[in-house]
Length: 54
Image (tube, rainbow, N blue to C red; front, side, top):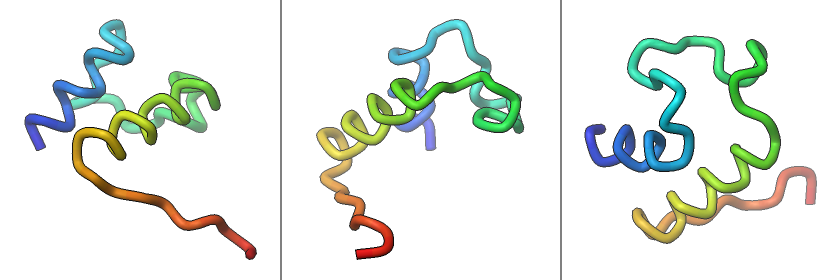
């Protein structure tokens, strides 16, 4: 969990990810932030996401 929080803080140091509960609906993260987070998680943790609806 700590490694993930560190990764998120690198991308958006202005956001308190440990306390924030409404990241997307609250407008804290936009689509580019989410794409960057997914790309970094893929690199750091070796995960991949499948396409939806295909």
